[in-house]
Length: 67
Image 1 (cartoon, rainbow, N blue to C red):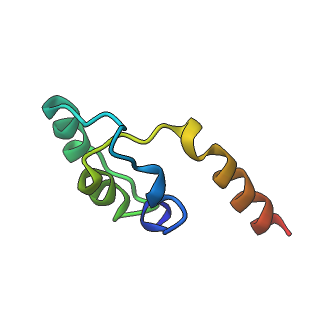
Image 2: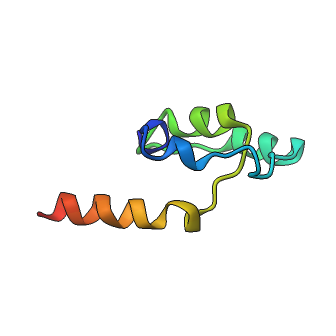
């Protein structure tokens, strides 16, 4: 549950743009079988997080798992 991880939640900041109603509608239609709580978590923040904001954290996690 990447998005609920305390390391990643701080990347959701008040200056991040809010989702539009149409984007939230699309999120409601999406399915992510590898993490059934991810979309719920994303919707719960009500704000967008861009990959560039968490790329360093993602790479560190990947490298840690490869050890």
